Length: 328
Image (tube, rainbow, N blue to C red):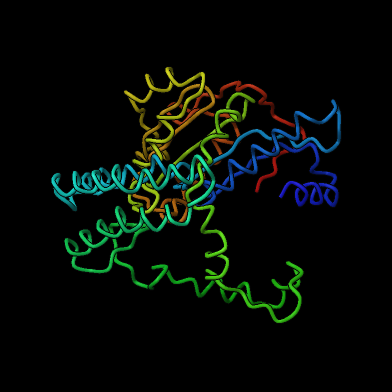
């Protein structure tokens, strides 16, 4: 990815000095910190004034899978909070997590092996029983990306026919330099299987380094998402070891309202260059469910404004930048 970015900037020299932002959702909880960490590392190894420097300012992770060991421990609490299981069943899930899932994840986390086994173990011990209980309660096939609705278009629950048609257009294929008879697939099983061993790896480990380098970090989560729920994301951010942890912990005791166009959009926990947003009435895909809030969220990230009060903050390394902004 780093070389792809360098190739992009070679092609578009006018963007070389632009402020740079890395954002993504879902499995990008892996990609975003990994890409940003590598950029930051390469920047530090470059000589002063090197044209290959990328002006990384901030990252945003939305309903991401970043620290599976912590996030899988939050599934039971999330479903209990939604009123879909009993406390006794939550306790059973927690027991399964600590007895079966966590040890399997630690084998992947510590040694880099057994990650596929860890995934299968945790899905069977934690996720599958919860899904069965939720569906029994709701009386329909659940949408894991938004528990307020049913899964209307299995297996992904949403109708992706429009994006499929767009990607198959000859003009789109030409713009993306697609050659041969390759067809667009919304989800490719082969790619999914190839990445399975990476699923349970912990990418939270690189986030403290980004914070130390002055990169602003935004973690946001729609509250109606089950699969990468807000409780799991809130939990890993809270548990992260970094110099600002004590101040963040203090701020987390009193989340502030985030207001967009006069209406509550969510709550914000902000300390230093770290922010966690809980987004109201949104599932896994916040921009789809709450487009106005999502736009406000990204605008604040780029402009350096707090979410609770909108005040412009002079973050470490932040400047207005004469070249504008670029993002992936």
